[in-house]
Image (tube, rainbow over all chains, first blue to last red):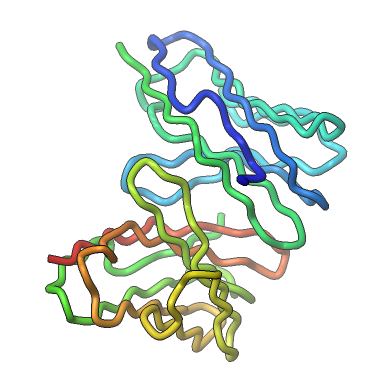
Length: 110
Length: 114
């Protein structure tokens, strides 16, 4: 069973709107949680990384939250742009190994 | 920021031939490099972990004789797909971990076996 579950699997949003992606994990012990953006045919690019003690971190229009007690994280995209169309992957690190979620495919339409 | 490059970015080869993919950390030394495979609409799957100067550690189900990994220096790791078959067609991504335990991903290599 995957230790990192993401939802929704995919979503379509209008340009300029906001959206929130979810990540639930069971990885233990927990070292950090990362959100990556992966454009089609490209490698993942780091958006945010949070440790146990951090519960929010922003990178421009991307804001990630972490609740280490409930083992949940979210990634909020504000004022979406066409260039935000990509797969967003939640990755949890434990014991030096990365556990990958399946990703949420986001499509931003004009 | 740290940069990881891969070469080639895409390659087409005939069934039965071997293909080598290079992964380089351009501005930092990587204690460990990782090789991943990604099929369409799926997430990255770890294939193997390689440390400079030692044998790679392969994940369960990955054939070490088919996917040869060499980590000759702190900035270069290579993945050779031997006797490639169409089912080996995939997107191969490497990542490199620096001394601060941060991982940086390469841009990926698209392999198509005809």
